[in-house]
Amino acid sequence: MNIPIVAIVGRPNVGKSTLFNRLAGERLAIVDETPGTTRDRLFALSEWNGRRFHIVDTGGIDPDFGGKTPLSVGSSDYISEIRSQALIAIHEADAVLFLVDAVHGVTPADLEIAELLRTHQKSVQGKKKPPVLLVVNKADNQKLRDGIYEFYQLGMGEPCPISAYHGSGTGDLLDALVAELPESEEEQSDNSVKIAIVGKPNTGKSSLLNRLAGEERSIVSPIAGTTRDAVDTRIDFDNVAVTLIDTAGIRRRGKIDPGVEKFSVIRSMRAIERCDVALLMIDATDEISAQDTHIAGYILESWKSAVILVNKWDAVEKDTFTIEEYKQRIRNALNFLDYVPMQFISAKTGQRVDQVLPLALQVQKERMARLGTGVLNRILMRAQDLHAPASKTGNILRIYYGTQVRSDPPTFMLYVNNPQWAHFTYLRFIENQIRKEYPFSGTPIRLVLKGKK
Image (cartoon, rainbow, N blue to C red):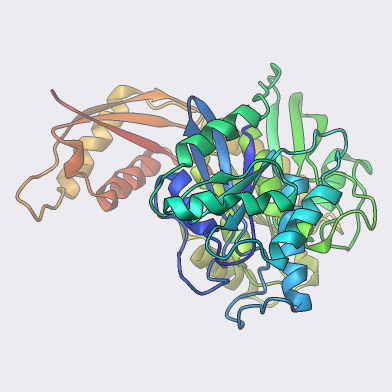
């Protein structure tokens, strides 16, 4: 199922991160009065009236912004930044929340964004243009709410007054939003193993797809961001039907602003949702970046299996210890995926590419594996004998028994005295004990605790 994506755009310090936190239901973004505080691209799954959708906070679109001085209003960099935000929302999202500030009124930056939304809101490869909702934030009192009519000059329709900080008006906003969202599309019945090739721009995703498919299915270019939309390639490998999902599609030169290409995480999100196994491409010639960790984190949050592919290995000067040093560096940066196998390849020369699909299919096989109830309970008993749960309150967790209730991913129901007494470190210990019996290589394990009545 394709879940719609809603992007929040607007000039700095209008409350994008505050609204993001409000809609996400928790404080996921850093909120500060200083413009430009949100330096990470953040995503969250939200739901309203039975409709699920992803929220994207575009407050930190430029990954190079880092600790630089916040952009000044009127500067060319500032205009470029807000243009990137608006274009990203148009080309990647299914709906846009255009956020403005009731306290400061209409500003030149607001007019700039509104003009971009109007003039560039065109159909992209047959995709319906995303609806734009004008949201007037910080309307905390009646006087400010009465003054929202000046925002009609933006030409973006009826303004919706809210207070993201206090939560007033957000219910009406969500009602209007879900009414505009496209219907979620159910995936057609397909028994093939779906393998997504994901990673930040210019890591060699399309080159790998062409190698795996055995022909030039995608245009390969050294320019980061040559590909935009997901492209599926169906192949047969050792009598197994495989669908390769590349976060790739052909982009016409000059049609997409460079800032849009930096937002590849959205495209990876869509591909990861549809896949069984994600091939996370890492550039061996570059350092592990925040974009790499964001994509890796979304693989984990989506409970998908994964293989880490370190590409461009042919371009690295090597000695006896090089590969182990690289492994350790990547494991340190992506320590939450320590169960994921790693392969060093060169999509350009074909080095070890023949090992990619067998490894991915082995990971998929382990994703579907099941442990017998007797085997699982022996593991649980041995784990508790080896390391009893610690307690600071005098209440000690007791695991009575467990059973695997599903695969894809492997999910274990553990019956305990009180789920609230379980510390995440002990659950991680239990997971490691299960993996000693059966590794479930590349696949996350889900532990669900059920207390006795």
